[in-house]
Length: 198
Image 1 (spheres, one colour):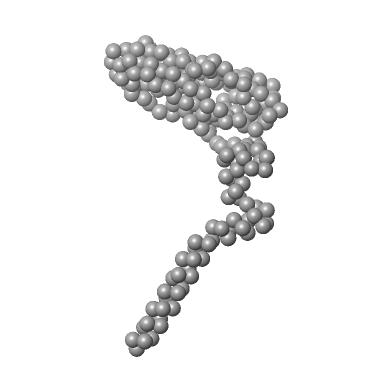
Image 2 (cartoon, rainbow, N blue to C red):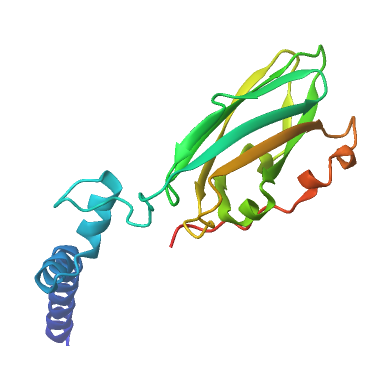
């Protein structure tokens, strides 16, 4: 009886070691099979992330046949400094771009504020996709505090070809102290739905 238990324990130990070895070898095996079949997804995604390897383009969704001028505007409803780091950029549709906005609370008191975006021309709004934006949040700033915030965006390649310039305008409002309802009808436009380039 004790001998049967030892044999069973030995078999279970061998099976455990074999399962561990199979799991360990699974990733290289998967890569080898994908490489042989020409569908090496892991290596391809690594190359795309670094922009390296066999001349593969990092993002094939960029429309390099045209450029769109994106103008950046900043308005402040209150005694504080608010401006973009650059006034305009030339971008290709589908190209991921980052621009910084600078803000400084010039008051001698803490404040809460939030930015409301608007777009011109109006039809550009649904084609302007922000992946990261300070306008998604409300911020608390101490007296004299300065901040820099990024806007990460891309212009959808489906933007009509006759639209060559888009103006992204932000108005910064104090939240709590002054009602946000003072905004203009243009800036009450809903945020475009964020979606990754397909």
